[in-house]
Amino acid sequence: MFFERPETGELAVLVHIDFGHEAQREDPREFEELVLSAGGDPVAFVMGQRKLPTPRFFVGTGKLEEIRQAVAVHEAEVVIFNHQLSPSQERNIEAELQCRVLDRTGLILDIFAQRARTHEGKLQVELAQLHHMSTRLIRGWTHLERQKGGIGLRGPGETQLESDRRLLRERIKYINGRLSKVQKQREQGRRARSRADIPTVSLVGYTNAGKSTLFNYITKSEVYAADQLFATLDPTMRRIDVQGAGATILADTVGFIRHLPHRLVTAFKATLEEAASADLLVHVIDAATEERLANIEQVEAVLTEIDADNILRLEVYNKIDLIDGMAPRIDRDDKGVPERVWLSAKTGEGVELLFEALSELLAGDLLHQTISLPPEFSRLRARLYETSSVLAERYDDSGNIEIEVRMPRFELLKLLSAEKINPTSLGIAMPVEEWEQ
Image 1: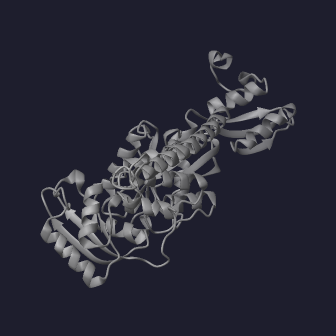
Image 2 (image 1 turned 30 degrees about the horizontal axis):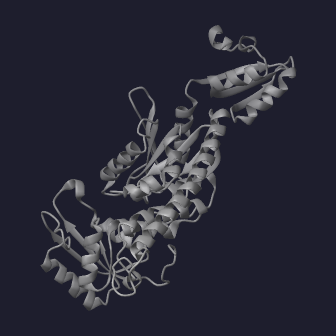
Image 3 (image 1 turned 60 degrees about the vertical axis):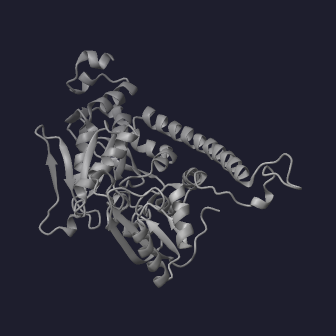
């Protein structure tokens, strides 16, 4: 029902009105990209300026007539507004233009419906669509209304409008139940990773910033990546090895966008919680776009909405291959902690610097030391290799293994505790009270 689409692009007339308020301002170029991502074929772009939208048609009568003429000349099938319309405005404009009308929220919902691949993603999109539709139900099938009275129409019964609302409520209740199960499964997975001390790194950022391209390069995966808005919808997680931190979960999440409809944030709560529960957020930024600063602000706003604004953050400025003279580098704060990495996910330049920054941020109190292991500690040696913490090793004249390790101090303490080995016996300087804990 919600995922059937025509095979060819629909001829679309685009409408963008500038109201002069920075908080309400939308980007016309981004709007056109959204329409193209939805499979639309823009044939006309009607633009204008107003102080305030009109209650009845959102635009003035003169601009409405201009839109009508554009529809007639190009035989357009749909008119798409780069704004959020009220249900009554949408119905009034449709009645005047005699063609389908879509607002920005409906357009984004349509793109999400196309991109959803997993069962969970489809449920989340359908939930958002149902909430959107519930405010746009119109009184239909009036010949079946029994409450209106008249000969043969008296008696109990519900109107078609009430029946539609009831069916929507039941479907919404069902989907919420299914999504709550998904949320519990995700929570169990997060608890299991927490017990195993496996850190989670989530890629977040504005849509089309290059998150999936970077994810594919790092994990050697084949997640769908394209130069279009919302190429990725369903979250994907892979295991990677970060030197010093060991096994790490890398999660690719849905991209954010300016004025992301609140219903979508609510519907994708289970997905966005992967970002909210991460140990580190890697904020991927399109370094080549002119809207870079505005896009960063929008991502920060969504992270605040999902209570993820206090999580450790690393900025990754992507697409430096599109900037002349830009070379990969790490920017650090006054304490030497990595703040941002400049790289190109497309060419791979600078990705090794990203791993260096991840290692420093995830490792915390990093121990870099050569320790001498007697032959009976071979199991500890194997465990150290499992954590990808061994840099080099050699045997001394006594048959002991001199092994160079670089890993978080707490992780080494955990391994020694499991093997019942006192760290001081290996020449590791560690406070006694910390060992006793």
